[in-house]
Image (cartoon, rainbow, N blue to C red; front, top):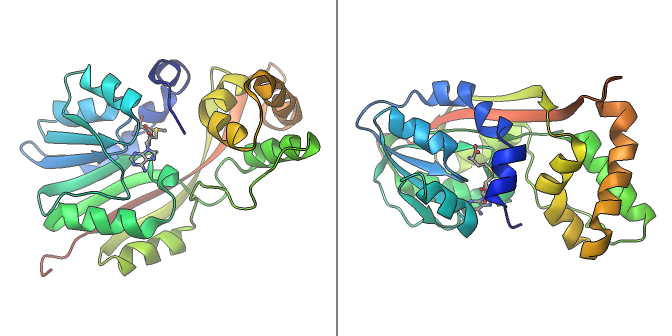
Length: 251
Ligand SMILES: C[S@@+](CC[C@H](N)C(=O)[O-])C[C@H]1O[C@@H](n2cnc3c(N)ncnc32)[C@H](O)[C@@H]1O
């Protein structure tokens, strides 16, 4: 799906802001060369640079990369499923992006190749059960309105055991892999959230542009008794998968 950097900065600032734990797990050191995979508009990439690492940001979305480049970052358009780097990074970091890249094998293989032997792959993304209530509500509304709902969603939300197995199949030694429920306040409200994060899914179901906001408002109404409090504050049912893995030295 296409991303809108302005909408992302306005309605999704919580995404990089909640990246502290995975940032600390990475523990970037001065002078390290680090790849930020799915860097988006570069908010966390900037933090890596502030830690005095040499950072390359890669993202598939040209508009997000333009926003990152405007911050003065080394930001490059590229697909995480087809990384072409070879043995050059001390670490590959990724926040809130791997679930958008689908099936893990090509991503894991590209990251493994990109790392120096002994390098680390540290990230966090949507895990099993992520935003389950929201996904069910979107599907229910689309179905009720007669749109085609894909049987399988593009997003990849694995269990910890599944992702550990994917990392190990790609040659990594896994230090840790945790599934972490993270109820997340959504200050902009559910309509803006759906617009930002489920617009692509709604479009792919064949909803014409002029009907999009109706689908969003129906979904919001269905979720209101479940995810909003009495004062109308929304909390989304996020589940994160956080991990740290190493490319062994002897490879
Ligand atoms: C929710 S944003 C996260 C951005 C940033 N890491 C952050 O923490 O704010 C997800 C990003 O993943 C990128 N993305 C999705 N699929 C991708 C792919 N196949 N290769 C590279 N980037 C991808 C999107 O373009 C988007 O910028």
